[in-house]
Amino acid sequence: MLNSIYDNVIKGDLESVKEGVTQALAAGHGSSDILNTAMIPAMQEVGRRFENEECYIPEMLISARAMHGGLEVLRPHLAKADVEPVGKVVLGTVKGDLHDIGKNLVGMLLEGAGFDVVDLGVNVSPEKFIEAIRQHKPDFVGLSALLTTTIPAMQATIDAFKDVGVRDQTIVMVGGAPVNQAFADKIGADIYAPNAASAAKKARAMLKRI
Amino acid sequence: MTSRERVQMALNHQEADRVPIDLGGLAMSSMYIETYKKVLDYFGIREEIQLVDQFQRSVKISKKVNERFHGDTWLVCPKWKPWIEVSKDHYIDEWGIKYFASPDSLYWHMIEHPLSNATIETLDEYHWPDPHDPFRMEGLEEEVKRIYEDTDYAIIFGGFGFKGDLFDMPCRLRSHTNFYMDLLLNEEFINALLEKFVDYWTSLAEATLKPIGKYVTAVSFNDDMGSQSGPLMSPEVYRKLIKPRQREVYAKIRECAPQAKLVLHSCGSVYKFIRDFIEIGIDALNPIQLTAKDMSDTDRLKKEFGDKLTFWGGGCDTHKILPHGTVADIREEVKRRIKDLAPGGGFVFTPVHNIQPDVSPENICALYDAAYEFGNYPIV
Image (cartoon, rainbow over all chains, first blue to last red; front, side, top):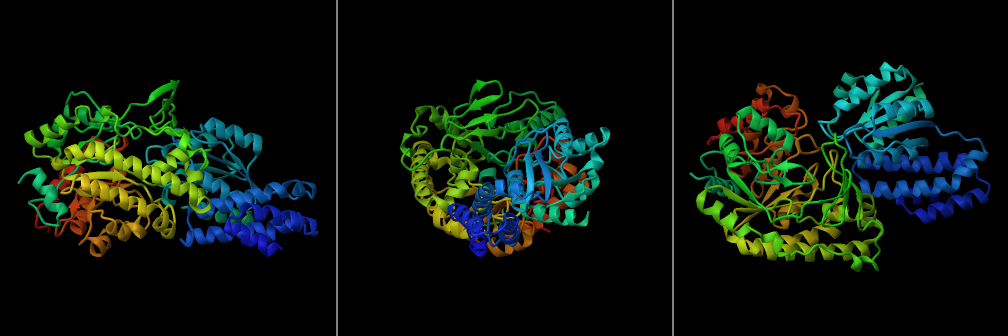
């Protein structure tokens, strides 16, 4: 039963995933078990395939949609069983930049990896990020930018975190077309990921280390 | 040798006197408006600035600036309807796509897509722009004739008034997320929508390109199909759903301007599609996005595809080297790319995309001056 949920998340078959989760719950499978042995591994497999160019954004999107649908069925049961998300992430595209496809994919894959994701949208000011850190106390803050002309706002955002003393309360992840490891190091980010699948993988690995 | 002959020779895979330089011949080989203002100030030139692309805020490069940089191309574009302001910072275009831009943002953000909720049943209710609207041709024939007779620029037809895309524009109408998912989940809808796009672009070619086709050295159109790290869809999906429609539109374009070469703009990592592009009649690919996956090794690209495909771009990386490099870095990069791409013709020099405002006028001079200096045939 869990195998078919796994397969259907990978296939992106939303209705079958919802049905599968409902049936698995009715058959007595624990919500945490369904999440951790079927759904999260399925999204990890989708991420792996994406990184290896065995699948592409459309395939990833329909899998994320199926995952999301399954999670909706599962969520009340997870809450009842006091199953906590593996971590919390605040995401946003930095100030001056309005691009969000990459950022949205990162959000979907993080959700698929078991994270609670708070998406602040695009053109997010440092103040808005800071407010979200104070409110949500996230394990990670993800900053996204597409343009060479807007990545300086990543530095400004991290600097603003330092100025108000919240920098050490969270792990900062950065990504986007013009961003690379050297740039991430230079601006004092903790994690750089070249794509959405890698962001989810690195976030989970980082949590295990803490 | 004239600019027109130089570009024609390059597109025919012949070595001219030097590598032709394109500045503003395509909607993506120009400069962002703030960049252009800095360049004009730098040279003390005063002129009225005209946008050639409202979405990208790129400009028409004037004759004076083109002469300074030894540009060989001139873009002619059917007229496009300026966007209408619907409320503060919100605009709507003739397709019904709504955009937002905050005062400090460089680009537009699409916030409403007219077909985001459409179904196959409601698709016919969508009001398509009129390809035959006489407005589109206003002044176009006179302009083309004048450029053809009074200058020796290679005339490139295309730009914001003739995008010709079968993937990017449908994404914008439908919303990217929906369209991407449709590709796998809703083939019937995709087929119906793309058939309408084929009708629209072929009618637009008929209405705007055909009357002036004989003056044109190349026709350019867009279809962004690559991301930084790979193609935006699988080659299988592309070949099944998108490619046949591109083939149809490109055949019509060729019919409207039989002697012109076809230039496709497709950003990002499109290595996996290049063979398909050649097969459906693309003569030149713009750009080579040098930092995208599989696109950095210009020597390999030239060896693999250079006998059949002209590379129109890839003259200098615009992510790192052009904005952040020194004059020496830029010269070295330009020299390297010319050495890889120019031998035997089949290369038109331009960087990767419209030059952004974080590039200094000094670096812009270094870019085109290096192309002029190192582009003399034979390449050494």
